[in-house]
Each structure stands twice: as structure tokens, then as C-alpha cells.
Image (cartoon, rainbow, N blue to C red; front, side, top):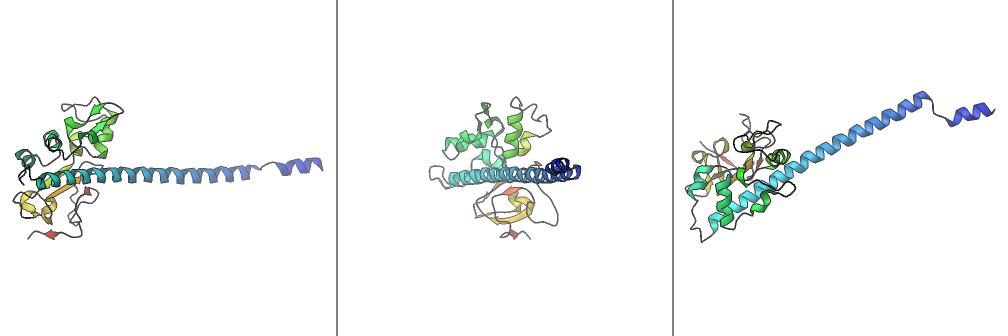
Length: 210
């Protein structure tokens, strides 16, 4: 009788395998969930950077001290490079501290205003320079500068002649976007707006150029 009672207190091999399998499934689900949360958080931070750049450029144009005109450096840049960032900072429209990596004391200003993926690459490789701007993971830092297009003739629209993405005519003073994790502008021919880029405009309310 004692032997039978002792056997009932233990786990069989099958029971142990079932428990291990359940733990494995739960662990996999947790890892997948955490990975999804990280991706979502990165995209949220990238969208916030786009919003910051959009606000800064709009405030610059509307500032009466500026005179309601874009600077030549902004017209020719087409992206948030060092010169554009400094011009906005000097006009008190952009706080360059948002481009400061306090952990490594690395100034991101030398590459301009980077999106989340560019910032992460620079954090992993803080010694990267203009001459060697590809990180060890193959990311080209310049590909992750925040992009923009301006309403050059100040008619209230950014259109195809002004380099609007996909030739769209969009009612705005400025369009701003991040190229996303791949660092490339999306170009699906069947889609009239960026596919995984982070954008400042509502792609559902645009007017296609004829």
C-alpha cells in the first residue's frame, strides 16, 4: 500500500512533458507579444519625431519675425539635415536636445534629425561618422533622416512639382515623414501613400495630381 501511495505523489513522464510543452507555448506567446510591443513603441516614437519636425517647420513659416518665407537651406535640403535643424533651433522652433543621446553623450545633430531606427543605430555605434555612416548592422544613418517637402509657392498645397510623395497634391504647408525601419521610401504602385513610412498627412484625404 505504501508503494502505491508514493507513486501517486509523483509526476509521470507524460505529465512532465505536457507541463514543459505548456510552459514552452506560454513563453513563445510572451516573447511574441513583447516583440510586437517593441515594434509598436518604435513606430510611436518615430511618429512623434515626425510630428515634432512638422510642428517646428510650420511654426517657422508662421513666425512674423521670419517673414513668411522658407530659408534657401530648407528649400534645397528636402530632409532634416544639420543645417535645417540649426536654423530651426536658432529660431527657437526646434529643441536640439531631442537629438541628444545622454547615455553615450553622442550628439545626433551631425546627422540632423533622425528617426527612431537611425537613433538606435547610432546608439549602438556612437563612433560612426559622415565618412563611415553605415553602422555595423548595415544601416545607413542618412537614410533615416526625417524627410520633408515644402509648399514652395505658398498656395496652401504641396504638389508633385514640389516633390510631393507619389505626386500627390496635399493641402499643407509642409509634408514630413520617416522612411520607416527599411530607410527607403515606399513605392508600391497600387498604393497612393506610404505603406510602412510614418507620415504627417492623412493619406485618406489627398488629391491626386492630374
